[in-house]
Image (cartoon, rainbow, N blue to C red; front, side):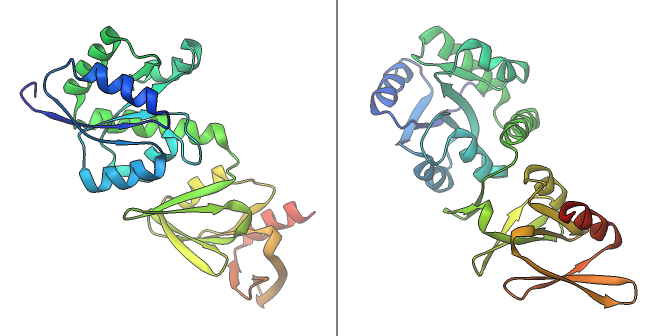
Length: 251
């Protein structure tokens, strides 16, 4: 693995920070800096097109931060070293999971340690597991969500949660409906329910979550079942448990 040239992408919204890291990296053999990006949108596109082995990813960026980039990439994420201005105490979560990070300004000794760890973990399942766990904890800290990010190829959609009418389960995916359009996202419906505002979103059926803001009516469908009608005319089945949850929210 030490003979392999590691192709590197640098992502930071500050030009001086990118330059400083580039200068530091030039002192290490076996690295090729293949591109630099100044925001998360550029980063996702570049990673999908260039397929680097390693990304130095700034956490604090406008519009899309480092965690957003990680979420959008999903299984397509390369190895990542976070670069951050957070203090040491805020980084305990990273240390506990051996997901590496660098504090700005980056020091040569610390960079060497991070690169050595990357070479040891590169492409291993352990690394993927650590990354997923860290991302999950970050998402939990942001709950309830105010937006949902979806990537289709290199295209990114940012959907305000307030505009979502309903969400439908489709195997290991969910289909999100908003403003007359729909998007497919790799996510479980149960997980989406955990992250959304439980005062505003209700799981009315094992396959559906609705936004109460768009609820128009609850109507009988048969003797023992009901449906909800949304403001856009969509009709959605309601299970017995879903009806009880709905009643609880509506008072």
